[in-house]
Amino acid sequence: MAVVTRLVTHVELDDGATDAREISVAARLEAVLADGRGLVLLDDRGWSFSGGADIWTRISAEDVRRTARMVVGPDEPFGGRTREQMTADHWGCLAGVLGRQGVGVDARLLERLPHDVVLGERLRARFA
Image 1 (cartoon, rainbow, N blue to C red):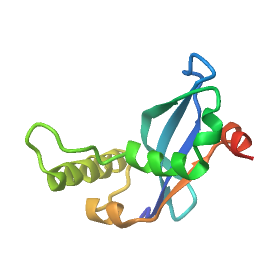
Image 2 (image 1 turned 45 degrees about the vertical axis):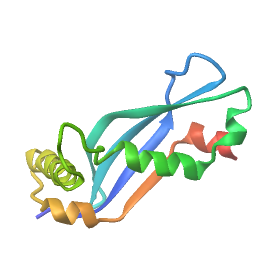
Image 3 (image 1 turned 60 degrees about the horizontal axis):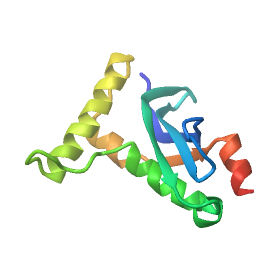
């Protein structure tokens, strides 16, 4: 039986930025299994930082890591839902994604797993 050991969000510069005063970042959340395989949970997330020409001097790798964890959820409450409901729905949805890939896992376990953020090559180069 496959066992999920941790979560990893991979982030990389996205070509969506339209000028030098904006940075676009794409994020992909994966569940890492004990055998080393990574199963995609979310691959449609991203965000932008906007600012002046000196934008790279005003953000850090830690800013990107912190934002990445927020972007892959859970989402903020809306429509009268509580934070607890949003959290339960989020982790339940991700457990469902894994279930459809043949990996049974409890949503509460997913929520407690270590969550690493890995910066892509182009992003690391900008912070070097």
